[in-house]
Amino acid sequence: MKSTCKLLGAAALAAAAAMAAMPAQAEGLYAGLALGTSSFPNSVNGVTSSSTGVSGKVFGGYQLSQNFAVEGSIANLGHTGNNGSGTVASHAEGVDAIGLLPISQNVSLLGSVGLAHINLNTSNGDAAGTALKFGLGGELSLASNIALRAQWERYHTDTFGTNPNVNQFTLGVRFAF
Image 1 (cartoon, rainbow, N blue to C red):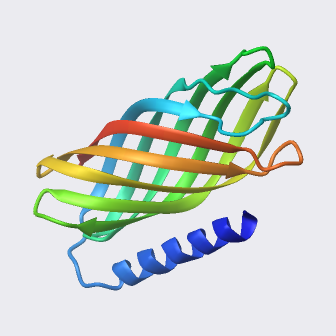
Image 2 (image 1 turned 60 degrees about the vertical axis):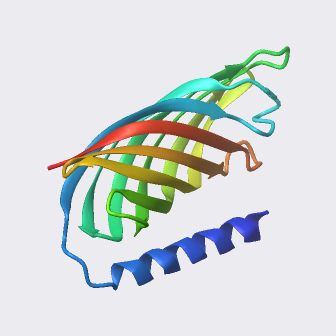
């Protein structure tokens, strides 16, 4: 599992670097917010849950070219649980390399890879650690400075002596300046 995550991360970084080398016009600063759901697909410090929680994030970055951006985010990864084993709540701060692949004038696919500092609070104890973060999604440009973004992100953490994952599915809006 660890080698698969490392391989995916290396592939995403290589793709982002290749896209960044393509000639394109710099796009500038942007910011956005997104709402969605989160899930904890495996046990987190002895807490298991099949339910999902409400999540959200605020993000901002700099689009260096048509195909590459650097982005920072603060995310509330939701609160879920209590099927008898307890509850989990989580939040994270991260930075990502974003690769964009335009497939039409108004639609782009995106991939992201980065690192996050994640806090996991469970009914059995709390922990903080580093997470490898990667994701896939798409953007639909509504105007020259406004786009809708749908995105799935996975936080692969190193907490509680194990590697619990957190998934976040969001729909948001991005504003360019």
